[in-house]
Image 1: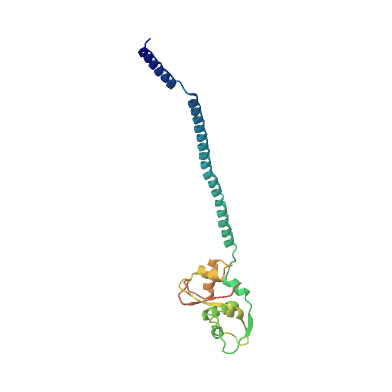
Image 2: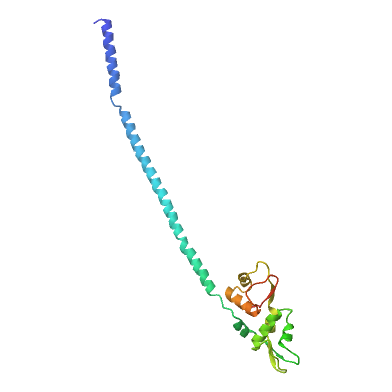
Length: 213
């Protein structure tokens, strides 16, 4: 066989060897493929765990949130119960509780004249109203000379002459001066005591607020 023929045979065999090497599966490639499959599976497992954790967090937060509602409800109920425990306040009960000094009626004394002695501490109509109440009389009744007339001096001199301001309301006055009593009772009581024709708080007028513990 001449050199040319030998060269051709060698070329053919070399090409076949190269093709065989390319077509045969490599062991290292198989291993890498298996490693990639495992890594993908692990990654999917981690992602799945993370997703479960993310889905769990809102549920735990919701669980905490649901526990707030009963507490808020209890606070509302407690506030309602506190309001219901406030004491009632009536003019009749107040008059009965007053300590009075006995005054002996003199010639010329009238309910009006005796009331004017306390106008420095209280409104005239309020004084007259309270004196008539504790003595079970009307403002027009004549006083009998030598009779005993009851005067609640402490109540008439220890209260507050409140000048009605722009933003005053019955609720504000009740919370400021009579926080232990119901607002609606305070409104009726003060209106009756001051002989107010209605419950309107007129700007710049004075309202007598007795000192009540």
